[in-house]
Structure formats: C-alpha cells, structure tokens
Image (cartoon, rainbow, N blue to C red):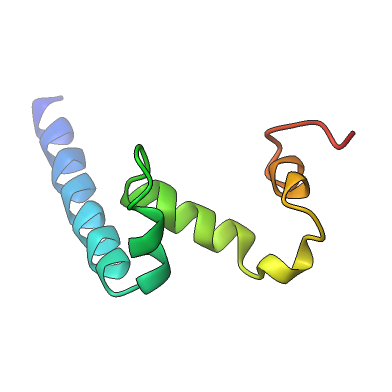
Length: 72
C-alpha cells in the first residue's frame, strides 16, 4: 500500500508540474491567477471551460453553463 501511495504521489507531482508549465506560458491564465483564491488549476479549468467568451450574451449565463446557478 505504501508503494502504491508513493507511486500515486509521484504521478501527482509530475502532473502538477505539467499544469504549472502550461499556466506559466499562458497570459490569460496568469491574469486569472491575480484574482485572490484562483490558482493554476482553477485558472486553467476556467479557461478551457469558457473557451470563447463571445458565446455568452451575459456574464450571468456563464455560471449557469458551468452548473453553478440555475438558468433562471
């Protein structure tokens, strides 16, 4: 069990380094991370989920699109 946990931890660290590398090279993610409480994972997740902001007529619809609020 300890070896399995150690292997999972090593894989987590490798994936985290990959995410950090991607975020460091992306200007939009860097701007997102200036917001208090937003880290590299949140910034990258938001950027990939929203993708094209022009799809949303109003900022309120983004929350509904992500399932955070109701549509009404």
